[in-house]
Length: 189
Image 1 (spheres, rainbow, N blue to C red):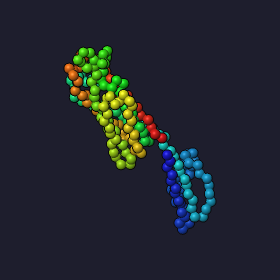
Image 2: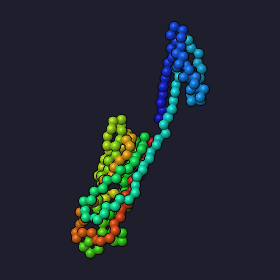
Image 3: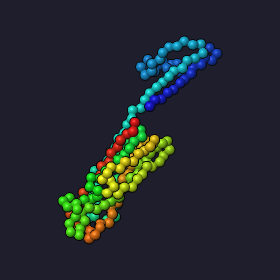
Image 4: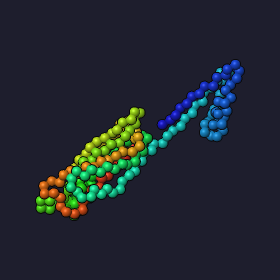
């Protein structure tokens, strides 16, 4: 990305803008600008360029304890997202739901997995403010799902909401349940 600035300094009645010439001289002597000298009776142009390096970062994660699983539990988690270029953000479930640690298929009439819905909201700028959002079932997330920002950049974070479903059949098998939800950021430069 570049910033281009063209400044014309024009002689008026034999006087030049001393402040503007001094600013160019200071920039040139500091090594910030390469100034080629061109003699002219009417003025000259100075081209100034620069760049901004692409920067994409994702922060957050950790453990969320849903407590006693009865269904319809709702938790939200904020995450940091900084990306000054368009990006893709992907979500993937390791188990397709909250799964019993030793018996994810359940036992007898009791289920070993509790499904959930993941709602995602990510504020963006393009140049107007917007929000990219999606809702995924935990079963669908066993295959990676990706949200694309289009031409937008991140506006500074996002939010995940997890809502568990009602247990099927006789309910859930007693024990500990786990799930790993992976969130991946990919800049599109």
